[in-house]
Amino acid sequence: MNPLTYLHLQMRLEGKEIVKGCLMRQADVVPGEELPLVLIAQLVIAELMVYYDEAISSALQKELAANTDDIEFPRIDSLLHILERHHVGLRWDITKHISSLRCHQKMLMF
Image (tube, rainbow, N blue to C red):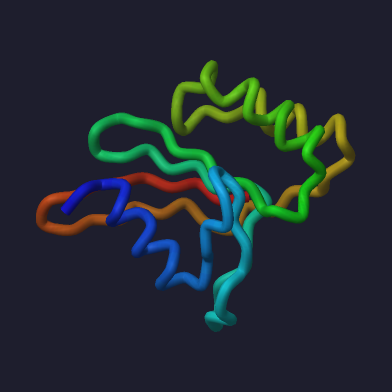
């Protein structure tokens, strides 16, 4: 299975829906799952995928997007500093390791 397809299916199982481009929203209420402000996934092919809650301001989303190319997953300090400057309180939801027979992805959600 294509790693990106696998990621999107996993997100859908967790109640997250991609609305356009890199924006996501809560599609279904899944017990124990909350919509993070930012979801960063490194696919098995080493490609980094970043999705943002559609409710965050476009200015904040653009500033975060401008800095995602420079991060070395899972070191995301530059993104955390941007959120702090915007007075966004953070709570790490989870660090996941998603495995299947053909895919291994890592996700950070905050």
